[in-house]
Length: 106
Image (cartoon, rainbow, N blue to C red; front, side):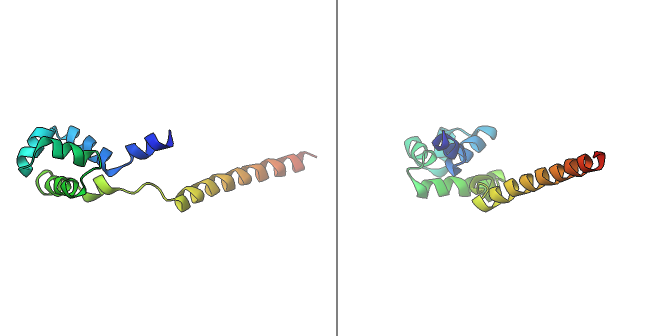
């Protein structure tokens, strides 16, 4: 399951989604870059970095796609830990309030 989630977060997966959103198929893309459609397919599946970069450059130049839309980073481990710590601290604060209310009742 982790492998599947990682694939969804890959630049190639994001680029494929962007291509669908702008209704740009592999054949049209191949014509614009003057290369064959199978080479496009290889690039979109992570097997041709040079062509992948050419596709990215084309989308940025002609379709106003932002670089970060393709190469956005997944949340870092530190960010995830900070968010978890924030939730734990909020829970502790709630527990303190409950304990204070219980102390007042006694």
